[in-house]
Image (cartoon, rainbow, N blue to C red):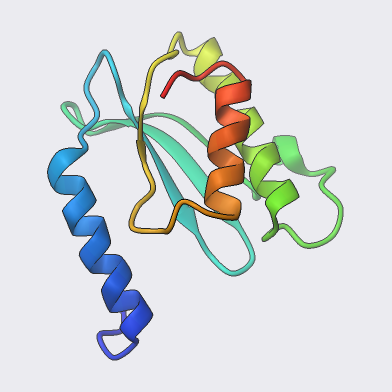
Amino acid sequence: MGKSNPSQVARERRKVSIRKRVSGTVERPRLTVFRSASHIYAQVVNDESGHTLVAASTRSPELKELEGHRGNINAAAAVGKLLAEKAAAANVTKVVFDRNGYLYHGRVKALADAAREGGLDF
């Protein structure tokens, strides 16, 4: 990350602050989100073993049918729904949400709401 961009510096500071308190366990793995300008990525991670249990993104083969730009709220909601389906298949129902320093608004909120509707508990 560039140290000269104030918004990136602020996000990194928020991220470190959040990660001090939020950690994924076997019972409640961590659902983490990464947002870029054109895509959104989410994964469920067990921090104790360092393993990614489930991952989904706008680049996933299951979301090939998405029309147009993938960096929008509709695409984020589709990723949240897909992640919840994959998590259910992996017997994961409870997670702890890590917004990764992003504000809980827009695409991050849409992904979280769709994951909740899909059956994830957080």
